[in-house]
Amino acid sequence: MPRPPLSRRRFLKQLAALGAVSAAAPLSGCGNSDPLAQRVGNPGVPAPPPVGLSFLHGVASGDPREDRVILWTRVTPAEPVAAIAVDWVLSLTPDLANPVRSGRFVTGPERDYTVKVDPTGLRSYTTYYYQFSVTRADGSVVRSPIGRTKTAPAITDAVDRIRVAVASCSNYGFGFFSAYRHIGVRADLDLVIHLGDYLYETGGGEIRQHQPDREILTLADYRERHAQYKSDPDLQEAHRQHPWITTWDDHETTDNSYRTGANNHTEGAEGCWEERMGWALRAYFEWMPIRDNGLGFDAPKEGPGATCPSTGERGLLPEGLGRIYRTIPYGSLIDFILLDTRLAGRAPQNGVDIVSEEQTILGAEQREWFLQELPRRTALWKVVANGVGFAPLRLPANPVEGCTSPLSPVGMNESCFLNEDSWDGYRFDRNAVFDCIEQNNIQNVVMIFGDIHAVIACDLPRNGNDPQHYNPATGEGSLGVELCCGAIANVPLPIWNAIRPFNPHMKHANEGPNGYLLMDISAERVQAEWYYANPQIQNAPETPDPVMLQTLVNSQRLTPAAVRTTAKPNPPPLVP
Image 1 (cartoon, rainbow, N blue to C red):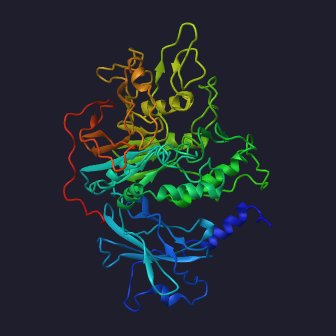
Image 2 (cartoon, helix red, strand yellow):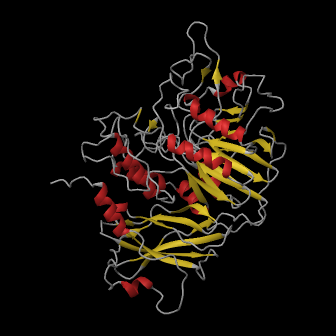
Image 3 (cartoon, helix red, strand yellow):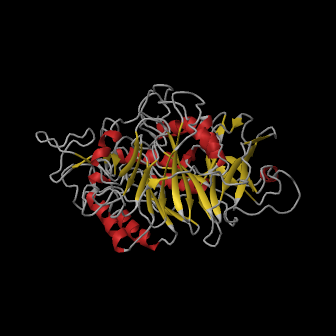
């Protein structure tokens, strides 16, 4: 007899009973060297698991704050068990001598044996090393790889430069993740930002085969796909060596998703959208080193999936596992503002009412939050991370057929916008952001995105084609800049060089190579450097000569950078 569906209420009760069972407290005293052995007989402490157990999916860390950082791993038992006690330690040295924090987390099948802890009271802008372990039934101890992470600087910390790798669009089926390996070996990086499409929901593959080998639909499917990606050694290395900050785009659920559905979801034949989205996001929060912020979003009151017939409930997400938009303060130099341009409130594309308030990419709640958050941030640089492009990009209209963009099926009266899946299709929200920047005289806004499998860089005028309001030679009229990081591994879209002549605010386009963006951020400028590694070749080398652009402080424009940035001296050692 099949098990009844896991209701939201039952899932919350199980999750509450299963989570962390010890505080992130300093180690103290001497005594027995194996705390688990001391507690095996205590009520509520699970029995040691069978001998067959391993850490197949590496370790990861993320969402760094000045006094804390998320630590993550996943335990793989040889056979299902009800619960596993996982110990962890955090140290200032790679040998893990003299740990400064330790604890225990009890995991089990209800969270797919993932582990997520949030040690507090840490030093700001400090590198730490961590490891997880489990004592097995025969008394032996199995240990995870050692991970390396770093807390954010406090506003009082004197920090000259921040180095950040930015990535998106990593399609396992399209090729190898060599670019992640190159990110991993950069010892001087402070963190990695991933802008979405961390995984893909489709089956098959050109170079490697996705598992399961079909489009994923269920919680088990999404978990299996996350497990496959986390098994990749190059991705594991990038996670092991650096803390990550992440947001999602569409493929973490399915292609061209929005709040109440997706272009690549057939209601009924592929289940209930609200349930499918809930499964996808539940797996995401289980498998990613992201803080559960306690702020979910409401299920839709109408549209596909408003009430899932299989459960009679509106979604299966626990509170706190829905809202991903947030700010990560990074000292006095940077505020990272992460947006959700897919699931928090996006309306479906319609190509007609793109200036209507109801045609929103953020949703009313997130839009209000962002328009309040942006002016109140006090760091020098405001780095706004989201899934899709913000800059207005246009095509010339065909005198007979009107707009003929391959990405824009419906033309607009006043101009032809390139891509309705981006902010081009949601102009009310974009105009509100432009108004906010202009009215509050906000300086040094840097938008970053992925999504399009290409590298582009733009000034951010309201209309790059209007010489009365934007001067492409001087940058006058630009309200910020935008950088697209490119794809780790995915099919290029060969259109961006063709549209440059019609968009004078587009300062660079490269539609071919796959790779990542390196941002070197100081009080004087943000320098952007794009590095490439061919995903069709395993262990591909990195291109030695990056494309380089910069935006000088208070300039709101992009200009060429003459000299490649250098690594920061004497970084803390990587873990071997």
